[in-house]
Amino acid sequence: MAYKIAIGGDHAGFQLKEIIKSKLETEGYFLEDFGPFSDQSVDYPDFVHPVANSVESGENNFGILICGSGNGVAMTANKHKGIRAAVCWNKMLAKLARAHNNANVLCLAGRFLDDELAMEIVETFLNTGFDGGRHINRIKKITDF
Image (tube, rainbow, N blue to C red; front, side):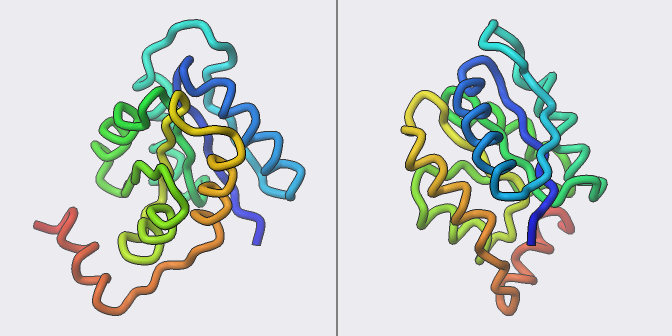
């Protein structure tokens, strides 16, 4: 299934964003790029909130956010009630984020991941389903407390 994916970040994630976007588009995914559109310094919340809103509303199935460490974009995205954003720096974390946490936004560290590993993480995230079962109640407790 070719998901609709919102993508964004900041200047430190710009180059990796462009690489991921190009690769996923060639694989048939629809990408909505919320910026930034250059590597000039920007404030990541300006791009994260629109990505999170589009995933939260169902306009896009998933989000991918990239900043220098992945932390700033994750913290911002997780302010949205319907978002479960996960910082992943290897394939196993991406798999667990989807399978156990039903993460809907992948956050990457543009300054710490090489292009090949980043793409492997993205592919793992997009190709892993939610396990459900015992994890459902835990997911509900994130926002229903």
